[in-house]
Image 1 (cartoon, rainbow, N blue to C red):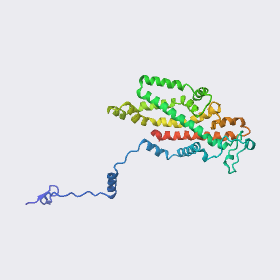
Image 2 (image 1 turned 60 degrees about the vertical axis):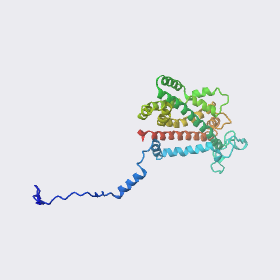
Image 3 (image 1 turned 90 degrees about the horizontal axis):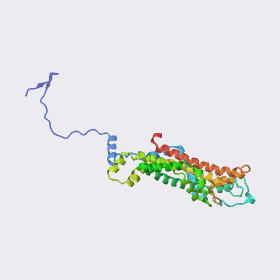
Length: 333
């Protein structure tokens, strides 16, 4: 058979080799690529982090968050189990030996650390036991205002129309009444004021901010594609609100509630200082601050320590709220 020549080189080229069917050579796969492929096959693709996971990742790297958590854990322990910090009855009085006694930090006996008040009662013991009433008021007022404001804001934001106008005007009316003034007038109707009456007084006039925040968040979320898809699939209104809108709109309300918790604790102390809040024998920081004003010049320590604990508690909640706000808002991270 004659040989063929190529036009470019003129070199002789032999007859073309017949094409034979056979296995093709496997591509060279490096060890790292193979390991990655096996890991992908075994575990599947990595799932995207949720909003909560992103928020936790942001929070755990912030010093302010951990400082506020440590302070709040300490105060919550004082409120829940005061016997861990003081074994003395906060209402036990010994005028003969402890009238306006000064603090004695060198003593091992901890009841002497903060001194004594004009009744001969341990300021340390009263400060520890006072955390329960103050924090209880703050926590339950926060829960009540979040539920009331969240419900009103959700109804107004989702349904709109005349219901939105009615609820928004109602919110505006209550917004025109200052929190302390409204609670002061309402609590005057109760001859005996306990923790729960103070919670009622502050809750009635403290839900408006949460309602406005929830309304704005719901208006934003109800226009999302997943809500439209849920409606197209035949989901009812309760399911759309509770399963789709609420989980995505609750973040801003949590931030507002965390910051306002400290505000409600300070409001309870203010009402007690004015003589309209909690009443003896209930032990609270506000009651002690009110009683200490009579001996401020002679024994300032009676006022200093409950006021310091109150300030630290309010500061801790405000710092926690700021940290949570920054973690839940992607624009601030």
